[in-house]
Image (cartoon, rainbow, N blue to C red; front, side, top):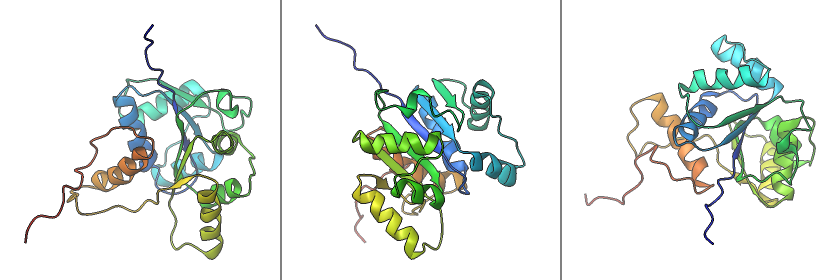
Amino acid sequence: MLTRAVRYPLILGVTGASGLIYAVRTLKFLLSIDYPVEVVASRAAAMVWQAEYNTRMPIEPEQQAQFWRDQAQEQGGKLTCHPWGDVGATIASGSFRTLGMLVIPCSMSTIGKLAGGLSSDLLERAADVQLKEGRKLVVVPRETPFSLIHLRNLTALAEAGARIVPAIPAWYHQPKTIEDLVDFVVARALDQFDIDNALIQRWQGRSEL
């Protein structure tokens, strides 16, 4: 008997690193293709929203879900939001099946805690679960320059199985807007989960000079 393939949700973690547009563009794409998303934003992420956009991010899950939809300008798809302090949420358990977790943007504070096996909130716990279950954890650090401590923490995460996708755009696809630059990073992050996307024009090989 043939059964329909299950589409496990992707956890989207949003930390207090600058560059929340990366999270917004990621969510916009996932919702546009009707991909189920579980969002958990850290306490610091709410503070960055206020600093970057002078906008308050709601804490209550249903209000926050609508907030994210408004920011992404996408009302379709399945979106579930979790409070950062709800360590009893579904995504805190390895028995809850997921495709994995993408933390975008990812602060170096979060990187350090994950590298040390520490989890003080739901976002960090969910990321730790992906590692212990052998699922995909992709982090998109947005910091410059990296200190030696940062590099060692990133190395520790990579050795534990995480994929590191720095927020470094490219220009070979001839970007015209800020969104084009952001989408390059989003596309490369989603590639790690084998989620098909056409957010960028992919490299077709070098043309003859």
